[in-house]
Length: 191
Picture: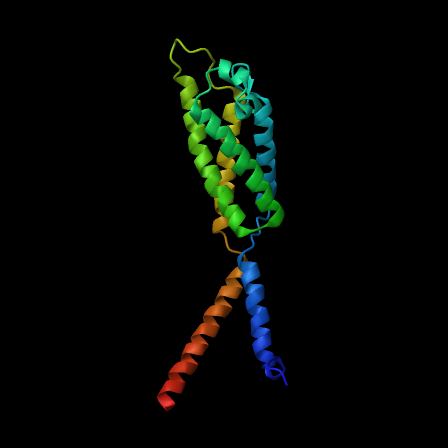
């Protein structure tokens, strides 16, 4: 007979439970925050169509075209729109669809960095030298920054919250570990 034929059925159940626990531990349940995140992503996409500064909208800044160059777009603005697009839109949508904890964590970290660059982008638009052409921060830039701040806050709340299933699985794992240690201690004392 093969080795698998002699395997204890309880051990197989433990393996199944461990596999299910690992799967649950890697998932998120954003609940109603999913709606807020989805709306924030849509607002962020809308902000790309609005004026970033002067006549340049967010898409112009993202592409780095002549309209953006004519407005003296600085590096913080370019970095902000790219981070907002990659993490605020791309990774956020992936995290919502797949419900993977790792993607939610990446989205929160990326949105946090984008928030800093959004603030720097607004500041750089307000402190243009008198010799540089271009206007101040537009409604699209400000709205995009607010949307990224909202995404950062909600992704952090999702990443740090634990579901009831995850908490129960952790409690079960702690109990099994304690029982195994107890059996080991009692087994060592009998020898």
